[in-house]
Length: 148
Image (cartoon, rainbow, N blue to C red):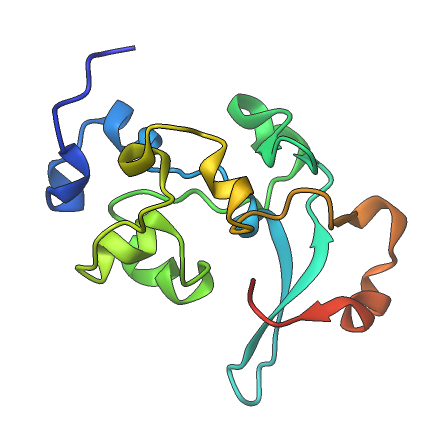
């Protein structure tokens, strides 16, 4: 991996290297929660039903590099697509925060120095998701949660 510039996360998103872009992820797993979007209102609700590839303990994708092979609809978040997708990302997401010109939270590992902080403060989905393989899609509305 290429060396990361000091405080790269304060730069505009379109100035980040691919490695810096990937390093923005805090590892919360919230973007891997299935969401319900209502066409008539545009309302978006999070569920605790996770993508089949999410490891509920590490909050990481088990097949990140090849995820589109298994989940073709998985969103490809890039500096070019963030404007279209930001509303769909969790409010605490580093990509969304930086897109909105906001700073990273103190628990983000780039600030705290520890990848465990996101879990310690309860900002991740660790331990409370249910895989989409065990819940029929028509029942996801029974798993709606307030955005974590």
